[in-house]
Length: 147
Image (cartoon, rainbow, N blue to C red; front, side):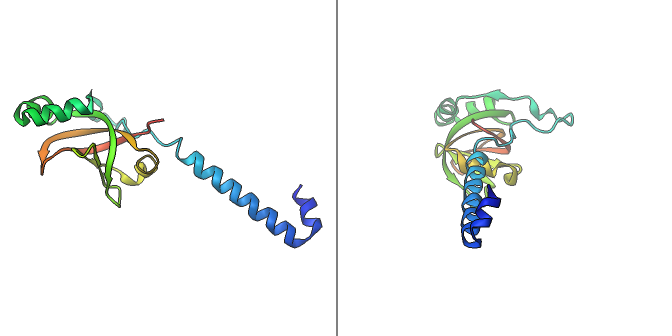
């Protein structure tokens, strides 16, 4: 097919080539937002951080608003998995704020950029450190592709 277009003239060939490039580039861009890495689980190097509890974000927020001390006893220094709507993303993707109340500091932001950018609701697995500056702080977070 490209040989037929090329034979028709170099201008037509360049237009066809540019159109093909745009179509392929658009397809790659669309597919890029769906098949990201699952960064929820730490590497399998014997790291004990793959033990975690799943927590509803509304429950986490309510627990901390009701009693930070009781919530700390329940969550602090434990790995938790929560899903929530992004309300702020740091420009370098080093952390995100979920539901205006949870700050998730991302372990490898360069590996998670695709999910951070493409999805409004994301799932994070992180180490809860309790309240810090009015937000529940999760450190060492991995982001799970929500598709």
